[in-house]
Length: 139
Image 1 (cartoon, rainbow, N blue to C red):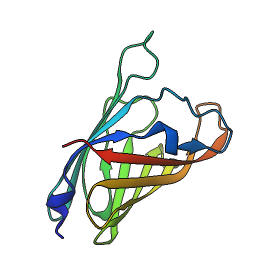
Image 2 (image 1 turned 30 degrees about the horizontal axis):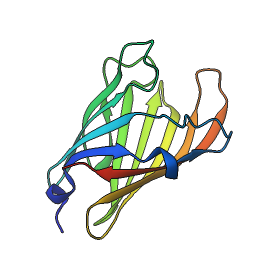
Image 3 (image 1 turned 180 degrees about the horizontal axis):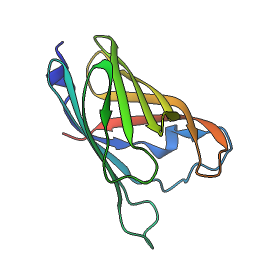
Image 4 (image 1 turned 30 degrees about the vertical axis):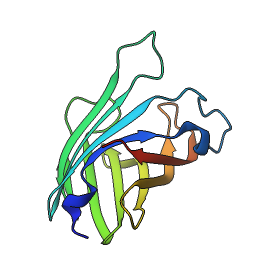
């Protein structure tokens, strides 16, 4: 399987996802649009869980060798580092001023239909929590 087969739209399965603080929204609405090439990842996410606010998005385009890439338009992150660990596994770090805010491990299923994303994230207040999120391929 090459990286391009992992490209597509991924929808969170809220019933099988959790946060360590027990505050995972049961109506979580999050979509990931991933575009892989052999050595790059283009990422776009849309979170519209809180219908009283505008849809929150995050976009980046980065190489998969662990190098730092800029990330514009986000108050929470200014750089990202992505590294491919194996054919189906990736490490994604989102940073602000050199401080890791989110450390994520992604694992795609052998059939390319599901994605587990888990790691540690730090809130704007400096509190950390772990998360485990299951995504199902939409297309």
